[in-house]
Image (cartoon, rainbow, N blue to C red; front, side, top):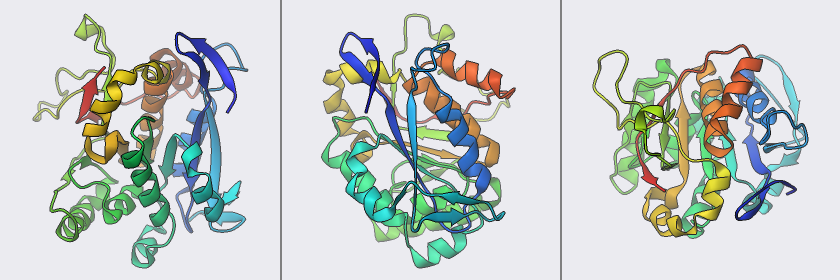
Length: 293
């Protein structure tokens, strides 16, 4: 990992992201988040200050999407398991292949379990697990959504609830709150500031008049979390050792959640800049749990 910026705690490393592909994945579930993260810079006008390094894993040399797009893999799943400790973010796309994947419980099932276990055994590192669209159905069947809140593609809300209930029955009986939201974040970190009305990550009122979710919209930047060692114990007290878990709705929700991740781990200004480059209107989601730092 190369250092790209200095702060009070020393150099800030490039954030390592692993995309885990499966047969018939959703092409846009991959390409949208990949473009957002790959274009993020710690210093907006400095091409050398790259914030994320993206790696693609698949079962073989490549994976083919449901639309016929074949993506070359950087590593296979064996190598992904061997190097899993190096990654800060694991992204699970959805797609038409999800139904078959749920039957076979093949990769990335084991990779998700290993990533979640890694956070539980080593909460000193801030890790993020993010699913796009129906990718959350995999997270649900693996069991990592128990005791958390989550969303999925709107056409799969009922299936998501069924899978979550079965996972709870087979697990520790902790239920999952399936929410009809753009994206849902669990276990975030917050630097609230003195003026809450100026914090871009806090939702004070729902625009549609429905009941509030526990309503924050973000967390502090990556470089801030690195130097806050006093938060390790509080992170460890959260479910999954404080693993940040993000689930999204439809295809464009993956863009929105990726912009959130940029804002949370790099800066809000960088996320807005990327949205501007994409000519995209960033639609926020909700955060349902976290700790103030």
